Amino acid sequence: MKANQKVELPSVEHKSTTRVLLVEDEPANSAILASYLQAAGYIVDEAVDGVAAWSMLEGSPGAYRLIVTDKRMPNMNGLELAARIKADRRFSNIPVIMQTGDTSQEEFLKGIKAGVYYYLAKPYDESTLLALVRSAIIERERKEIFERRLSSQQNALVNFIKGEFMLQTPSEAQNTAFLLGSIFPRPELAVSGLYELILNGIEHGNLGIGYAEKGYLLSEGKWEDEVTKRLGSPQYRDKKVFIHFEQFPNRLEITITDDGAGFDPQPYMEIEPSRATHGNGRGIAKANLLSFDEVIYQGPANQVKVISYTQYSENPLK
Image (tube, rainbow, N blue to C red; front, side, top):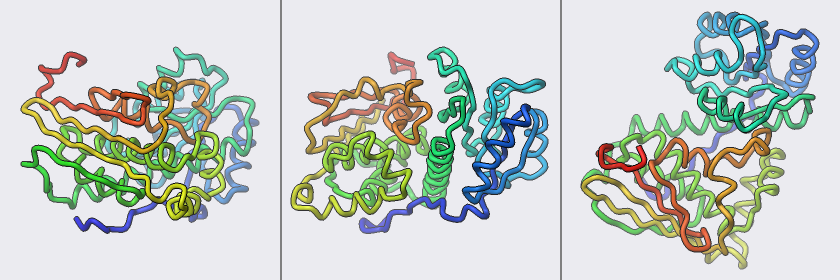
């Protein structure tokens, strides 16, 4: 892999070819959501419950880029539909946005287990819906980029024991995540988790882009331009992210250190209900919950260590 390989960026600009499956048993609610999505340029197909939605998925594999579903429905509810989608390799990449009036911690944890990371709270807000749709589709496209590159990439570090890396840009973050993540036990999850954590060090740590500001930039499609601008600014251009990699007989460890002042990571280690309806803020939690066996922030939290055990009997947490 070339060190200066250009980063593949997801794009959701071709809305006229983006098909969304809307699953809702209340006609009035379905009409409201469909009107929001269609006004934004998306193609919308509607199903009255999970059973009908599943039939439509099976009848048109690959047709839908996103599913927006109510949680409470007859026959097959939204959580049951999401769990079935997650368990089927044909559809497991399709992100699910769950409509709900209940965003309690207990209900939200049920959603995570079913593979739901995006929630639309009732009553509906058009701008929130469209921000969630955009973020969910970008996440899906990024995952597909990762999978394409992993399927074509030869493992260059299989015998690599220890090393140091230094980087500054999202492009370098993506390339380094692929290089290191490809030797982990679950490479598709490790690549995604490493990219999120390295990117967090770049944009939040080094470039000072805060949580709320990132949400605004993503919703307006201005994130890439703002990152590029700050990378060239005298205030930020000398800041780096440093990565230490080490392979042990029973585990892999990576430590990521940025030049920022640090932050309080605890609220971001899990996906909180208060952020479930936001378009961003899931990267650290998904790395912690899905990508690695341990994610440990150190010092003022401008340094994070991730560990994956290659012999799971050795892992005290699993």
